[in-house]
Image (cartoon, rainbow, N blue to C red):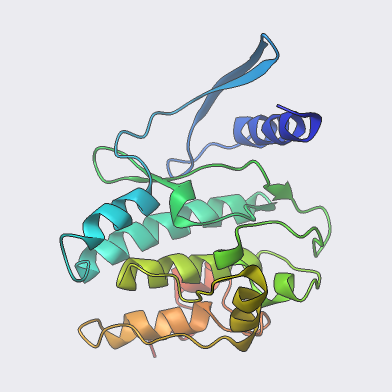
Length: 222
């Protein structure tokens, strides 16, 4: 690894060692050996959510809505814990959501996570498909960018696709900033559709916080 990669792994191990939640991949130890940084972590037997969706897509048309809610609520509880500790994940995506053999969810890969010491952060990081409009516009951002990424993951659970797709990053950023995406199947409930619309709200002031979502304070289902 180069210096930047080593610092990223050190950052991940430092943040992970401070966390203790059943919805976050557990950290046990880290050590340097032969110029390699090793992190000993909880084993998630069923791989990641991205791989699960890719495999499932070829066998079913749509995921059962109960399963979507089961995954979504666990992800929310993990994000809620992170945000309560002032930690922004900054790279939430289906491939960073891991699954246990009992269908439990574990949020992992906190290599670019940041402890928020001010109201906003400003470093441009993340995976393009899940970038929030404020990051695309290079504006300061906060935990609401994790909420946008959560919306992208929820949309992916309902469609097996990203809400915003393009052949190059420039076109993708334009689509994200426009905020237009194909509707989910009418076989799903209005609650699910409404929630996706709330999470993928372009104006982060109007986007619910994780607390709003879990306590239904954002009038999502009214």
